[in-house]
Image: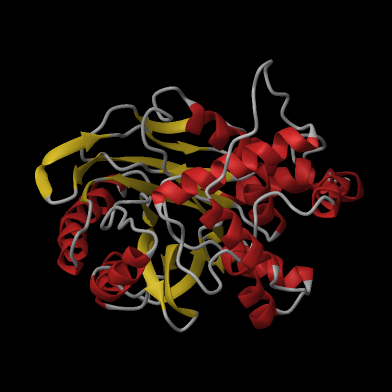
Length: 381
């Protein structure tokens, strides 16, 4: 029997959580949407995979500096807690895999740090995959792997294969190999390539806020990920989200999509609001194309020696984005993150990567930020 089935992407209305209870309210709403989606879309083929958007459960609890610790202690859930068990019950009832995401803590991995975690729950209700977001929208003060790089080296060693599998994990399941990318990290081709090189056949990549949905930036990225890596891309987006503390004030988004491994949009809902997208994915067809196609199964022809030089050169210059920023300290406040952006731009101009217009002067950087960068540099020395 051919391995093909229906996938459902849920485009739901969610809440910008200010309390732990807000997460469960979103989940109770999601349960109804998932139930309808599985019931209705199984008229094509049985639904084996349901995908929820980033932000679909509790939105984004945002806070750098000391507020990071308040959110850790008072608001955000734990990755294996009542919220994920609630989704596990749905997965068992529906006999589906569920991909979802939360801003949450994982104290077994590292205490006092908040992560943006994508996870997969299998039809038995177990979490089989956790992926920690690797790059952020400038106003998301959570912790990425590079922010605690020495923690990763202590946990996984410096073996590049083990590190790759830890940072870009892929769940090998009976319905195919699934990897996850969250919002901003999907802006980097390396992130999707990392999943592809670990065997991904389906990439869940979600979501972007406006204006980057309406101007097609996210779609272009997702179609590129699909083509470059010969993968399906499942990309649900939130339909609307309430502003913090004001459940009646909704900001719409939308444009959920599913894209096949040739880069074709095979399901799309262009508007906002609560709805879904669904398509049939043919995993055996993808596998056959990868093995018999001569050209557009591109991963097989990567000349890694050539591309590795790019990153070796960056490292030789001292690296681009500073690592280990959150080993001993919480993420930057929004104001200090803006200062870090200036530091990064100065670096690109200094390297000759960016060419400044006439009259431009290097940005002055807040001394608190430069001092913190100096402290982070001491790790690994």
